[in-house]
Amino acid sequence: MKNSFHGRTIATISATGQPKYHEGFAPLFPGISYAEFNNEEELEAVLGDDTAILMIEPVQGEGGIRPAEKAFLKKARALCDEKKIVLIFDEVQCGMGRSGKVFAYENYDVVPDIVSLAKGLGAGYAVGAIIANEEVSQGFVPGTHATTFGGNPIATTAANVVLTALTEEGVLDNVNEASAYLVEGLNKLKNKYDKIIDVRGLGLLLAIELKEPVGPIIMKALDKGLMLINSGTHVIRFVPALTVSKTEIDEMLLILDALLTDF
Ligand SMILES: *Cc1c(COP(=O)(O)O)cnc(C)c1O
Image (cartoon, rainbow, N blue to C red; front, top):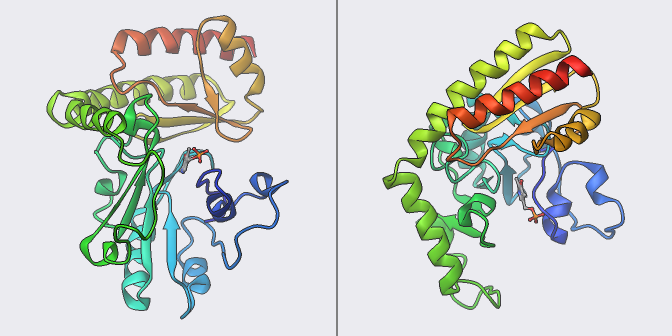
């Protein structure tokens, strides 16, 4: 998709639909077309008879925290079924509980053929994974591909601990409660400040869009002990730990409120 982000290997930089990430990495992996996110007509237009793969982030992370529309992902699934295209959801950022479900696609009733995972998968420990359905996984047997440290016991144990915490130890419930609480707080700020033009996201992958560049606010927040991150120039992204408490959210909102007054 245009505005997507898929990573820093040459293939995934190439798949990333933002020219700024391509700079300095030519030659890119060939044969990739991009469609506008959430635009069903453009999507249909780029999928040809020779298309092998369609890759989408259910929530665009680096592209400004933009959730897909349900109709868009349903259309993507239908087109892939019709044209025998493998549908990949890149859930590296929005997966592993971040969206309020283990997988972001569960919010959409659309099941991809392949899901990529990393970031939250190891909760700080470096590990990534791909999951494929039975049919597609036939194309990838032992020996097809490998990585030196793939499947190592420490990384896979970390991922197992995270999955258990999410599904059996209440972390996913906390994501949903904390999300509702944080959205309410951000909406209050939006009502208070004209310069906030949007509050959006899913679960604990949330954002506010401002009329002005957010860099100075983020720098100033650091001085107050608050680590924020932008997503593009005008968006502040909120991706707290999935175990975040209401007290911590209150503290964050107080600091942010003061900064928005100052700027
Ligand atoms: C972070 C991220 C990746 C991986 O990025 P690397 O820089 O290669 O670690 C892939 N996809 C999405 C959606 C991401 O947010």
